[in-house]
Length: 238
Image 1: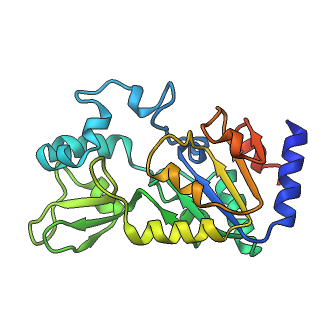
Image 2 (image 1 turned 120 degrees about the horizontal axis):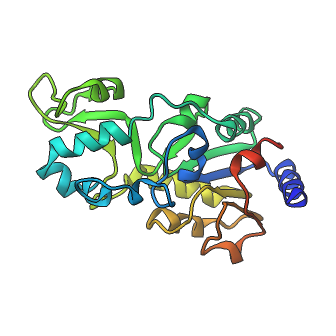
């Protein structure tokens, strides 16, 4: 494993247009639970299945129940960036990392100082009134009781992509352009099974595809380097 991490460091050193593509595994070391692992949100018992709660239909028809779950399980304000977030910010500040493409909605990359972040599934930090489109902070939404309402009386919705909703076109286009122009793509903390986000790595035409994940992924055979280790252990070495 140490040999693979050393190889990873060497590829980082010679690359100057790096893009990082990350999933839930990037934030688990900050204490945020993922979705599909043994102890993930999808394997916890609720009144309704989490996959159902996190759908557009459920939000529209059972808004109060949605917000009970959302406030209980999706509040990332109390969490801090971990070593992976911090090291990625350092790489960006050095001019080597050009963009982060993330499936996470927790805002920890920005909290660590990263500037160029494409949030495929939105962010809990942005919330809008469905009536007048007025912006509301995450602090306002998570501190509210029952259904958060706008001053105009409209329901406030988190700017997160729920099941049955499409990804934001501008964000997807930006992510694709970044991946297409990269000479190194680091894919980390993701099982690469969530479509259409996982399909974006097919746009990579650069020299080095590196996969870092505890478990194998469907794309392992396409990678120049696969490291089955925790992100914290890998990024603490660079």
